[in-house]
Structures are given as C-alpha cells and as structure tokens.
Length: 66
Image (tube, rainbow, N blue to C red; front, side, top):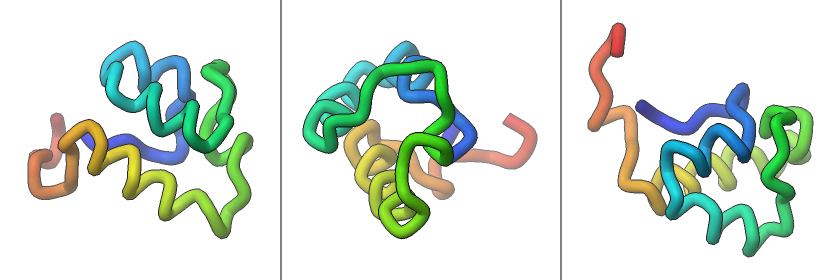
C-alpha cells in the first residue's frame, strides 16, 4: 500500500508509525482530516514522497487490487 493524499495523518500513523516523525517535522497534526485538505497542493507531492520513503513504500512494492 502507498500513502496517498486522501488518507488522514491519524490513519497513516496507525499503520506506519515511522510516518509520525515526518508529520512532526512538518508540523502537521495527527487528525482525521485528509492530507489533501491539510497541505498546500504545491507541497503535497513532496510530502507524499517523503512519507512513502520513510515507511519504505512505493508503487513498486504494491500490486494492483491490494
């Protein structure tokens, strides 16, 4: 699974504890609001890349359909 913009920080940290450090670094609260509502669009892609790198997830580690 890859971290996506429609996921909330709270749900992400529930699955990937390592993501908490990235959220803390960027001062993003661990709420149930989605990343796309919390982060400016210009910063969203780089944040998603940083989060996925921190948890070791990428599209290469995922298969279609789960």
